[in-house]
Length: 216
Image 1 (cartoon, rainbow, N blue to C red):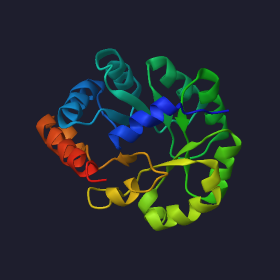
Image 2: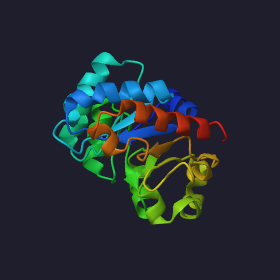
Image 3: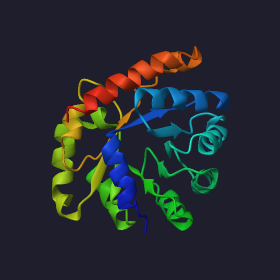
C-alpha cells in the first residue's frame, strides 16, 4: 500500500504550487531553490531528467531543510529507493508503474504516480494510492476532462496533482477544484534562466505565481 500522509497533503495544499524543474549541474540546485524561497515558493519537484539530478537532491536535502523536497521522473524501483535515501519528502512519476509504487511503499516514500485515464487511476487505487499526478494535464483535456474522469471515483477521496501545460492564466481553474490541493508549476523555472544563473528572474517568476495563488 502506498500512503501520502495527511500532514504532507496539508502542506501542499497550503503552498498551492510545486515548482517543477531539472538541473544540468548539481551546483545549480541550491541557488535555484534559494531563489524560489525568496519568491515565496517552498515546495519543489526536482525531476530526474539529467545525471546531475540525484546529487542535486542530496544538496537540497543537506542545505535547505525548509524546502518541501519532492523528486519527479522516478521511473525505476532503484530510483525510488535512492530518492528516499537522499532525503526526499515525496516522489512523483509521469506514469503508473506498479513496481515503482511498491518500492516506494517498501521504503516509506510518499509517492504520487502519474495517471491520464480511468484505467491508470484504477491501477493506482488498487495499489493504495490516494494522491496522484494528473499528467499531461492540458494535453489530456484540461480541467473539463479531469472533472469528468474523476467523477466516478469521487467517493474514494482521490486527490489530484495536475502538471503539464499549466500557467498563471489557467492555474486557478485547477486550484478551485476541491480535489486539487496543489498544482505543478513547470513554467516557473525556465531553463534559460537556470542556464544564465538568473536567480533574480526565478524569484520574480515565483513571486508572481504566489500572488496568483492567493486568489483561489
